[in-house]
Image 1 (cartoon, rainbow, N blue to C red):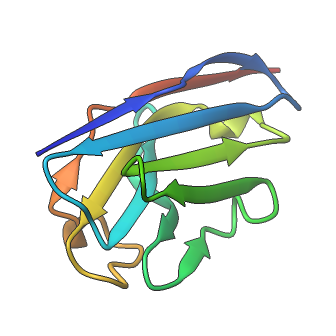
Image 2: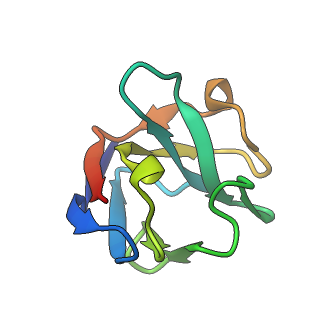
Length: 118
């Protein structure tokens, strides 16, 4: 089983990026995104699996979507802010409603760096 994240990069504040995470080896009920900024703990961003849920800090700016035929989850990020700078990790779990806690997820991608300049 492998999760391959891609799409990170450098963008100016106010810009947009789309992250992708392709899963191989099995399908998952919940797929989501977490991020970790330098010196900070990993935090929840968004999840799709039974329901769709966003952290308050990204609600209205980020959109999570899935292409089940490709076994891929996306994170469309708009109106990016410097505080969105982090390594973004995709996560997946066999269960629905895995929620906001990273401990609930069994599988993780390698992370992709998003840097937002002011």
